[in-house]
Image 1: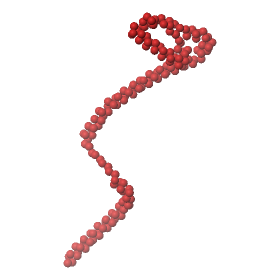
Image 2 (image 1 turned 120 degrees about the horizontal axis):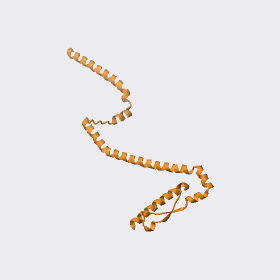
Image 3 (image 1 turned 180 degrees about the vertical axis):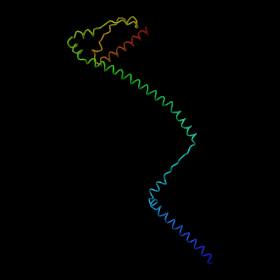
Length: 176
């Protein structure tokens, strides 16, 4: 029977050693697990990682690039058109600025104020024959203005009216 008790003694010693080890582990883990709300939040989050083989990943990348190339090209074309349009607008604005600066030249303004007959001579009407329009439109008097003597609003209106006249002459020629 003593033989049996010696085995039980070594079993009790091993169990006590295990309990001591578990007790030390619990003491080490106690600060980390004592914060239950934080721990539940950490454990509630799930992170799923999907691992794809490299050839499949490369295939998806090329498909995406192929589908985006036409859209990118369209956007580049639109941007180029907008740039061209803005360049034209900037060129016309620079021309307007040059006209305005030329109008603000004090030597010309003094000459106009001192000699009003030259201003009247510039606004005299001239007879212009229109070769593109038919019989009724020939020899229609057209006022000849010096664009520099007009303010910008009148200049715009003059350009608009000239364009309208040209359109009407073309329509008249087409109809006759």
